[in-house]
Image (cartoon, rainbow, N blue to C red):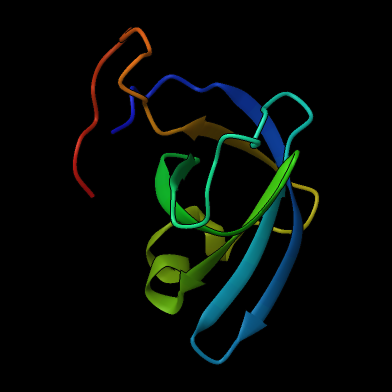
Length: 102
């Protein structure tokens, strides 16, 4: 679940197109990814993406062609800024409005 509150600004580091979509990597020095596991959800520009690879300050996600066509990601390029939000954890406070389901 996400609150809809942006936690950090990051950048697109790579965008590797393939026959069924693209693998994008996102990085941010403002957000700690050490408690994110492969398979966890991260909202990028409000789109829920699944982490397929993680490092301390970046992660990769595999986006389908449908996601590229129906979201801003088809138009974004390497170096573009993005908004990031990690999924809400049970021990966190809840602020703002809740956005559930995807």
